[in-house]
Image 1: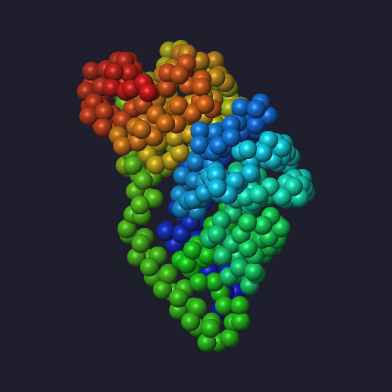
Image 2: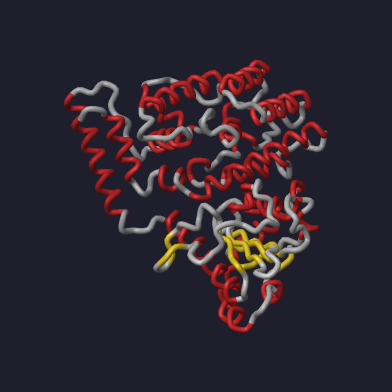
Length: 420
């Protein structure tokens, strides 16, 4: 065994249950970047306008951190560090206006710079202020601004890094985070052909090691230690091979999302519309073909081509005669509803289709309250003007055949969906 860490990376990338497959290669991960970055900008606006408030609940920060925390296991619990703990008076960005503004300055600076030196300098400035309870968990926000410069951060990632490198880094300290970041950059460069410029990949590897799915290569690789570690690695490989024939929960969720997109695609065609499938989903396998088969390869001129987020909307129906967008659908099976709403807002407010198309959030019946909760967020005050509707899975399934056979417009969809 020439390089044990290289062997571990290969095993990790092969394992269908690893973070590499369940999160890093997850199509929705890429779709969430712009909406989260937009949410971060909203936090800055609210703080500078004096409308941020003095608690986490109901703030724009809760909206965006909640969206991050929903991104599968690696970010589970990401909101814990931001929850207001009254007895401890932490994190001290809710009642201390100066600290609040310093937090906004960090987010704004990182959102408007493009080099590592500026990002690190901004982190060092807020570290020097010593804001109680505001530590490296903020890196989870900064990652979605600069994924090639900033690594995600949590207990699992730190534990994995320490196990791989022999480090003794601790949670809660910015200087330790910056040290880990430098170490991850070095490791990422060393194994750059196996990993990615996006630091989410190596952070995911560290997370899976730190969470106990994999054992790190022994630091002192004597023959006995190497043999035991190799045996553990082979066991994980066997388990991974067995899982190849069993759909994981994440894969099952993705399949349901794709099935719903296909249902909306077929319904749109039956009603006489041209159909657009999200640019990063059209190559997905569905049935005997691809999800994007027979669909538009580019959006009509009525949609601003510079709005990349609109190209990521799950399904769009276009009137064949006028080339106007007639309806747009975001399927929110398990993913953050926030991101879908942002893409809808971009379509309605940033193009020439405002007020002319119907907007639908399509979700399981048991997510109705979650959809309603998100639509009530202050950040989405414009939503009520746009009339975004909730379309339950059950209604789509029950009425699909009759709408396809007898329908001729989007009117039946308006009747089976709900305004919240």
